[in-house]
Length: 111
Length: 111
Image (cartoon, rainbow over all chains, first blue to last red):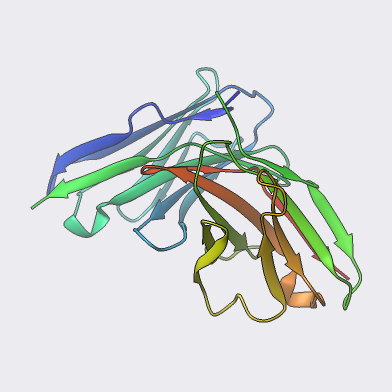
């Protein structure tokens, strides 16, 4: 069974607006979460991470929110730019040994 | 829901030894990938595989690396003579249409 789920396969947002990408997980023992961005024909690029001791981590235009009680993770991109158009994967780990990835959300930022 | 599986979860080896990392992609998928992530760095593409042959490979994927799909289900990555800098997480992925499913990874430690 998929332990990490991204239920929205695609998302379209106007340039300058906020993009919100969501991720749900089932294993309450996960303690480290990451977001990756992937362009076609390239490997995933690490974006931002958060450990379970925090509920928010911010890096420039990217903010990740963690709601442990709901087992929910979200990535906010503000403001969205056309270059942000890519597939975004969330991943979760218990202790950093194995990472469980979601299936990705394809973000399109419309100029 | 089907999943990509990888074994072992953690492999420790001596420098110069051969290692084989195993992946079982989702059964009706046709494209297969190996990625790696050195601790603290981005996830790097290694190789893609389609129709029983390599379709694309990165500069990292030199003569020390090889991939096989020996029995139609397993997808293996072999490193012939490991180096210290091969220590990383190795991820397998398979794809159907535009959804890429990642395995949980194998942590390779070269001593």
